[in-house]
Length: 391
Image 1: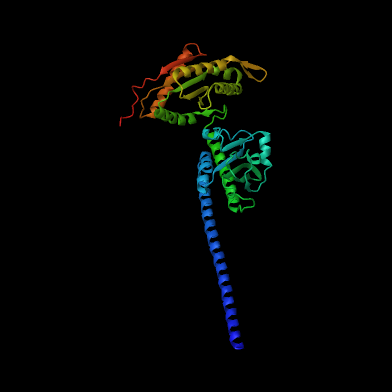
Image 2: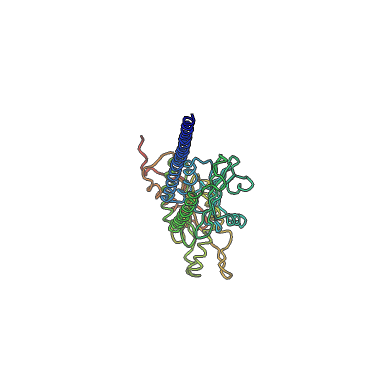
């Protein structure tokens, strides 16, 4: 009987060992499956990060970079909000940003900081990425969205200086938890900073090649590029577009009597006075020498003539002071022409030349009639310009 009982005891020990081995196997299997799931999730996450990084590195303009950060990033990572803050202490960046990103809205994506108070906020933020619950009082200057529950703040640093901050938010309070792993975000923030800086530098280079270095208005090359673009846009919406040709009166005598240095100062001051009359979306260029040209989109003829008259008055109203010793009475003449028709035209280049030459002829008439005035050539006569063929 003793021997039989010991057998049962041994059987129980074997079964207990088998159960333990099975439990260990199940735990190991569970851990392995969990590892595979995490590895799969991390690989998918890495793929998404690489995709957005490649897009940023392939971007050809600051507009492309901003669109990727505002739209593509949210879609790819299934987020609810994003925002970008950039250091614009010298107000140089705002000139490079497309109009679309200047629009004010409750969920504004881009903010440019230039006041000392704002710049202090930017510089005193931690240099490391921070994640956690969204707190309106604490985070609203970075991202204002009452629906956001968690936020990730990515400092954008170049050469030891914070050039901006990118924030992404989620309505899920668990999406960005405190002390969450940020390795992927850290790499992305570095790439963002490099791509933003490179895109802005490229825009500055482009702008410098299209700007008149003396007067700091656009040059003829820029105007010749934009004119067909604006005429093509006009063809689509059938809005009026006007051109004003401007020329400083008796400018040669300024150079002859006072030297080219004084002449340069006169050109700069005249350019500034012209700009005070024009709207932000009007296009002003120095066309050559003492000539300027302004393109006024969506502007009928009567309104364009009034603008030209205001420019003439703005230049003539106050003498131009050059230092303490030279005060000059400067005037200019202007010619106006307008295209306003529902027809479209095949040869946009010829249409542009026609618009310019008509305004130039009106400018010549203004000179002949005594200078210091604006002459209106009215609406273009386009019988000799080929219209689009009907479909």
